[in-house]
Length: 288
Image (cartoon, rainbow, N blue to C red; front, side, top):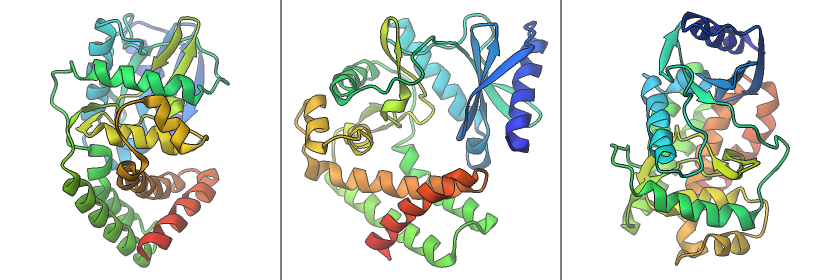
């Protein structure tokens, strides 16, 4: 773990202690965009904004949305990982870091849901999300990219040529998506299968930090693009009237997002550089 990751664990323990929960055996469940810390033996997970906090400011706005939307769905009995009922879920601030508390979901850590499972589940999730009354940013995981690029430029983490082509790619794709004039609704925002957990009660959805308003094609493109299976098969499992041609601008948008986010993650994690380079190569071929 780097210094930021160690600060995240310390912040999770400190805030829990301030709220009356002592944790002597923290387990880091994930360390990437955010840090996830299981406050064992309590059935509570702290979600600490680490990498996301470097580019989203104030990041607690995104964490508050995550809690609000998940709480809304849980109250309507849609299967999600809910905010913690044992500690005030937050967001909390400690040592310059923002964090939230969640119920620990017992799940099969190595299980990866299949296309046949994820497609219908995502379709049901979209139906449930339509009841969400809160305010959402317009396609924010994509529209944030110019701000992310400004941060990356200040860090000198990407060459000037690559920054220029990423900006060209962003404006090209944004214009293509705007021209489609598709119906909009609340979205998950990051609808890949790793954000679906297999529990003893079935599948549950998690990680609504990227929730936004836009065409369902954004979520479906994320699912199809990362399915690991034939794209036609993945799309058919979701149902509806979308076709792969309609999804293409959104798939390209996800590729661009991946290249930028990969560059950001690579400033902290050496093992992310290879995948980031693959995404960048895709963008160079399209916009270079």
